[in-house]
Image (cartoon, rainbow, N blue to C red; front, side, top):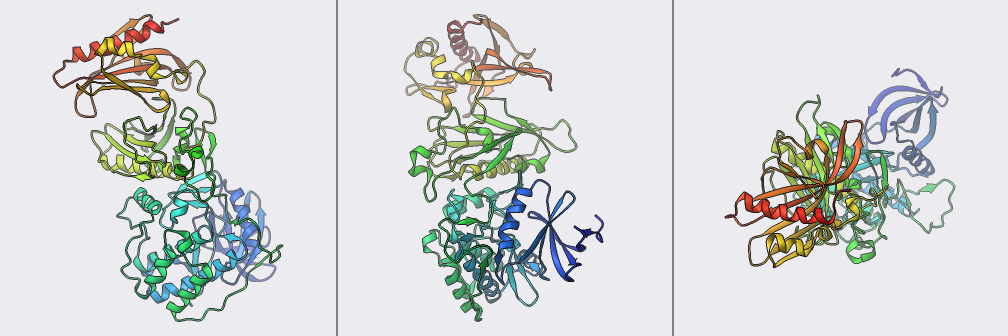
Length: 602
């Protein structure tokens, strides 16, 4: 860029003074008025958010909020013209100089609280108070900025893009999927001041996994304060888990000013085009908190919303999973959470209908590949969900697999996995954790989004696995006494016995023709349907299993990869440790033959 060019013929760029968020910021000169200004350039694809920020910011006038003077268009670029304050962000101050003293932090906080109080009294909610959005001049003057950006947990929605972030300043009620009100701003300011004196957010420092920090936010588990001193009681009240227990921004300002030992007169706020009468609805400075737009394989999916102040557990009609067969696992995937690990390709067709994922190839693209996926699980899938939102365990990577379970509000789960035969376990778990935090940010908002397109007609998706393998088939194959339980969507069925060691699963799946009919596997035909014996697998408890796959129908032709796909039924059998491979496969074959006989190939 030519630093000397004039934007819209009026503003001359001088020096870039900031980057990040919704755009790069430059110091410049207003050639007409002869004043120094700051100019923020919109990033590609964020015009909707940028215009929204401009409209709200330009209409709000407060001495402790960075003033917006103008919005100009120069060619394909849109610029926000703002008051220039020679300063550093509080985040940069902390990075450069280390933590603040309690008094210095309180002085900054009192000024920001005054700005928030003025906004709240005009029915505005900032929703993004962080160290990066507070500017601090050398003389201690602090001003609030960037109040048009909507942020959520690990993921920031900026226009149609999704950018990884941190959940360090997320209020518990927002983490739980409820709307951000004035009390959320007070909490975020308290979290910011906590970080200013302690060196890390209330949810923990870098030693805590990002997803674990999100879980702490949901639970409201604030880290103990060690350096806050006299500021500690004020922070404790601002960081109360229940929004009703927090002080108002106006009260917080007085409490902080007392700790700082300063008198801070309340500054008036004016809103262009408004009277002093309160609005009946909160004006959110940014996009509505209830909606998450997630781009998955070029399909835009919008999350449903729970009513403010309610949880999914308290509202069965808003259950987090809803109808299993219309819940979209792909909507829980956010590509930008895993894009730092390599080139990302959608993997939306493989596996059962409750699964969706990505193939990740490192740059430069080589033979190494990671499969990262989410899978929706129900109460009967044997996962033991608790019905409380959060991650309950962090199992280590085992034999090329790293798994995470995200418990949802209504006793459902999301299984997150990263698999690879070559990638080191640490990287696998980093990928799984990154995918997990994206899934959290969607699932915590309310009901899992619905599929944007229905599943294919005449597909296995319209059948149930317990219907396919009937009780008579199971008794014939493995004897009496086995009890069945359906999996998610009815697309799997599990059988076990209380008096003996027998476990059978019947699962639906989609896979490539080349993988289904591999030359190194035994093949046969049952009632006209192809059957394939997979190599002996190791079960979850270390016992060997036998897997037979029965072709159901062609699924679709992949013209890009040149490989057709088929729908298949898996018959997976695990017997006691004394059973031979032939005995296990005899049970699987009996089941597959019975199912094929009732569903002969046309």
